[in-house]
Length: 414
Ligand code: ADP
Image (cartoon, rainbow, N blue to C red):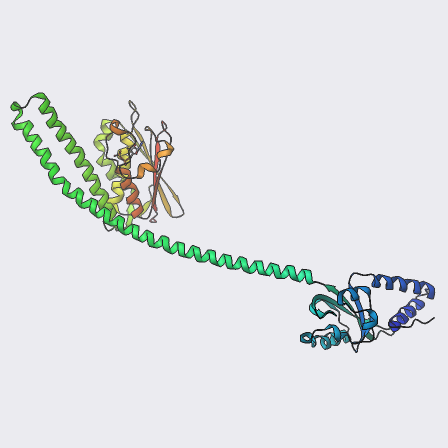
């Protein structure tokens, strides 16, 4: 019996192909029925049409997806499913099918019977007859409304994210600008403060010297008129005036380093270190200090006077904060890395609790009180001076295990 109906040509083709392969008509009919039921019960819409775009088969999935029954669609134009703004798609699809091409997962929009648009993914393949001629197309349409919704949602979130990122960037930019402005203001007020401290310190020296001088005159020329208590007070005045003068002098050095032009040039570290050692020659001898200078001492970029003062302050502290009854031992060495020279001044002194490693670099910060004399300005000169030469400074230390102070400056090359 010859198959009839919509897909007659296709079935006839299948049967003839099967017959020539030696299969019985009955076997082929069963196989064809089996295939037809797979198509019928598929979740996807499976449609076939001829090359004129007339629908030739329509499964239950197609009814579910598009709302039309097979009776309504078979024999009618497939363009009924195409919304007006997509009508020009069909000629293109037919042309590609005619040339034997298969169209895979083509995402587009189709029209439901109720007039609503549905997002679909189409896979269209040519149908051939027994003579291998293309006689139509089979089309599988899948509802991708949910997928599209998810995609749209993702896109919306992506846009939100992008907007949030842009807002954040704008925020960061404004913040950065504010920080820059504040830094500038702070630098300006810092500079004014430093100028004020410098002029106060400068003006303080004259009355101080008078106090010292008049007290000394009292002790030298009027000693007979003074009892022991009065002489003691006069000596206390001189001592206090001296302490204060040292403080004023240190403040003036700090002010000079903070304010003055900092001319940088390649420096022979060895000679700057030697000058610092000479400054403390007497102290080194008195305390029988052991000084170890470890070569090489590379050239660094810096200001000679400032670096001299920094090294002298660090050496002075290494000789000062010693463990009682122990001769000081100082090691001077360098490390060179990434065009930077790190200079270490290490001692065997009393050491510093890590809690204070940063604080001691601030002005007037002292940890020992009267046990070791000082003004609390030396390390702030170190930090300020190194900072003004474009470097960094720090310390590694544990109480009772000595201190390793370091400063870092750009290398000046050979
Ligand atoms: P000063 O030496 O006048 O006290 P500095 O600013 O040079 O002031 O040092 C600040 C403080 O840091 C010192 O009072 C001391 O407590 C601590 N300090 C500095 N250098 C050393 C060191 N080599 N060993 C132990 N403590 C140190």
